[in-house]
Length: 125
Image (cartoon, rainbow, N blue to C red; front, side, top):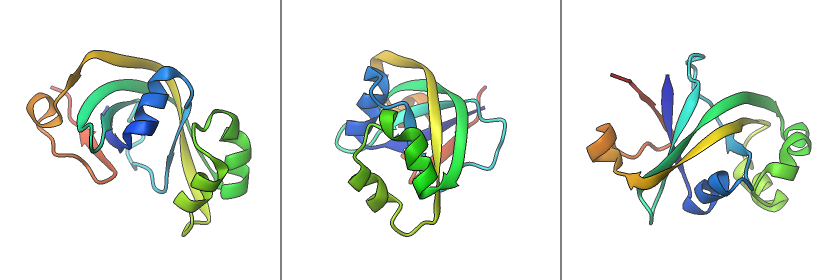
């Protein structure tokens, strides 16, 4: 099973250039069968630019999570703590096997979805 994640373009592109190996989330999908992620680069790009497999999902208190992920976080420590400001713990999706699409796809036309606030399950045909 796959999920579609809305990711800010600056971070979405870092996933595919290899400088961001963790995608941070305040909450995570409950379905344990999710094995890969479709990346929707949010506004102003508004396109599906690729996908990746989930190697692991880390869930720790914020200090531990940052210590484990900071080298390949693709974000600053300041941004990290501002993002998780109202949380005691966070999630980090460890990224592997990225595939950047040669031609970006349209979320509505190609996947029959609207941009998710956080994530959306993709039912494969």
